[in-house]
Image (cartoon, rainbow, N blue to C red; front, side):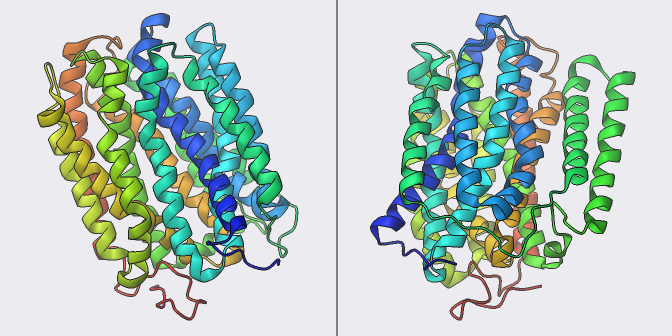
Length: 476
């Protein structure tokens, strides 16, 4: 393995910039598109279910293939697979921008997810593999904060772009991708797992793709179609494929997900917390901007700008929290952050007709920014620290898959529970009632995530690998 990269060097800054820009581009697309949904719905005369698919098509392929993306990086080279993902993502973005109807746009979004599945786990695995051990927690904190900043600034940027054309929210990815490719080729060293063979878990990949596709289609369409035979059959098929995935992985000699890593209590607990936290956050991102435009009557730019407090707080605090977590451990920080996020959901129920930024929107955005700043960096670093270094790509892929799957299922299920699935995308009365219900469900999910973090993480859980002499032992 090459000499570890140090964070304060020129190369270290370039590695950090390239990985943050890559993951940030994928995260930016996940948030910036939410601002464009109202305009897309108007232009294509789309139903609320169609808007769900514009969001979920991307998340579906991302969640289904992100495990494969992590393993491909470990075996074929993390830098090589990361670059392939960036280029793929850019080409798919161009297709989205040129879409003549909602169906083509959904297909383009699915292809974007494939690119994201290749680049997202690679961005984090590169940090974990090339940086010196003592620099990894702070590097992950910067990655989480600045990468999260890209997602947070997405609504503001999206509002500005949508005021010209919603198609620009996809075209903006092309110059970003070009800069990432140049920076990565020049400055990011290659890394991979020398102990792994080139065999891939095709059966496991097929099973997880079928599981998530079947469940997502079933849960999304059930809201508008009801539980007819195709919907039930799709759901049953998805569940059966999910069970098959676990059985295949347990018996495979080259598993997509090495099941042994789940024997680590910290790793398993952190991923369970991830599921409840990111499921709730996906519902917030999907509905709040839509609520501000359709119900409160705000412009796309005003709706996007409303989230600026979240952006600023994550920029200022995430890196510092990553360093603080080295001394305190992740348990208190994660639990406190998730509870603050839950309170922000409760405050979001104040948003409605005639909503004002200072009294109705800003309090929720501020609390969510504080909560995410306390949560994201410790959570991410803890997942990586709980796995052996040679499985860093797989660990990153698992955690990203859990987060994306949570968002995928939440956006499919919660709107149906809130009575939104049968509505048109521009119906303010139905959206207002459903929004309040959805925020309440999200707040409850976050409370569960806080409980899992507090009771599931031991006092000795660490954000540094146990092999590092300065790290506390990891609880099992």
